[in-house]
Length: 261
Image (cartoon, rainbow, N blue to C red):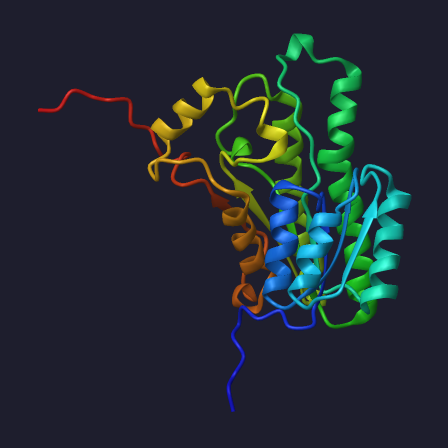
């Protein structure tokens, strides 16, 4: 008899927000490749994601909606339970990006970014926890944070504040939900090629990242997705309240080019 791997997610049911592109799409497909059925949501149709999941022989459910609306998130949870049979894994990933200095950030900018990048994560964690506790078989919640909350960048005040809040949410819920067998962790991407970064990553920015990242390149979404799958799997069964930094060594690099002896 062949024993299953701790990384196998056969027949588990996963939810991924922001599933139409970037890290969310890559995570949905990676979870399906590991064996999970996947429900997702995005602001636009995620047909390509659904097709990729189904080609892997898994069931798929993709909704259109704004995770900043708690009613939408609750509907996503209900649909996942009805159509997939439950929720074992929930990945909060939906996010936006605004690059503006503090003095140019309007109230609308601030509240609009927190709606998706922080409030939506709270709604997702709450919906996931309610379902997982009712099911009585534990589960995994993975929140996508950012290397920006570890090594902040100027002009990302709203974004970085939201991501710092996500980490605080993650750690607090790890304590609250641990007794129910629910692990709560975060994965913190460094520079990653995604649609929301496309405008911000000018050629100069890309060159600067490639020079500072010890591995010499910006990440692909799939490289972040694989870390999320690890945290969703039994291989991480004793990991909770942790923020897993996936940045190619960017944050630890303090090299400034000292003259050698």
